[in-house]
Image: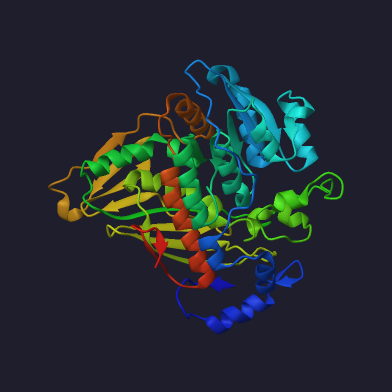
Length: 440
């Protein structure tokens, strides 16, 4: 099935294909309806109800104070973060003091891994947020929970590291921005490429006028998994009647019956994720914006196809084109059925920036070869690393500095992601007013 993002192209064929696709016995259209996923919902989606907290002040953490961290969601990414804190607990003066997961197996294993008592292994994230020992939280849940947990954490005075994407809807973007501004909590979004020094090096060259005006930036994230991307193994021990809180896991998502594929392979389904758009493209969007300048989009078009043979309803072959108010464009290429991407590149009116070998390469356009010399600018600083990104968050908690993937940057990226998903679902280009932050 193909969604083009171009109005009225192939409507009859597309409708026929949609009616034939099955998802656990439902057609794609029936599943989307049952899941409550609509393009309009992406624009105005609501954040799940939660207890109303009086805003609690964050504990002032000095340079020599230990940062006590609670981990919400300890599956793949969450257990990785938990492992990192064991590596550098003494070096960074940080400690894991609480964990939370809806599945007992993961929850108890995580607690044992960092030698916590069962009393510090919570089933409900709200109990973890009430824990006075917790200064900061790392959120690695499925995407549909990101906004609600982050907002509740900030309201409780907890600093937040939230996995990308920051949230799912434009309304959630605004709610997160407002809550962070109100509480002053330090928020880092988990797009670790933002801690790679090469992007800031490129940005310095652009702002120095080395390439003229930015014309087009490009990047890609492509994989090829013969078994289908995100088709993770299903553990038969997961049982919602015994050891897993399925209703809590669904949370703000549309309520559907227990489906182990949804639990273990949630990135394949629009009830919880936008697939490539939300899980992979932020790794390119955030860094490219750091280099080219942070802007809300003016126009977003997404095309996509589902070429695999499983029950996913997110595209496994997709491209996004973004236009900004300054006239520059951004191109993103993504696939989980072919691993050949396009190189990271920033094209300017006078020169083009390439990346490689620990340097930023500036190569003049032919008409400007007399004005601009080829130049290789060395990159001074760390490369892309989750650990460096986590350490940047710790540093900013202690100093009050702005993190490398701060919430204002993430808001602009999430706007592109949400508009791209909406473009694909509605089969049209999305126009956006950066001044009002509204779809027009």
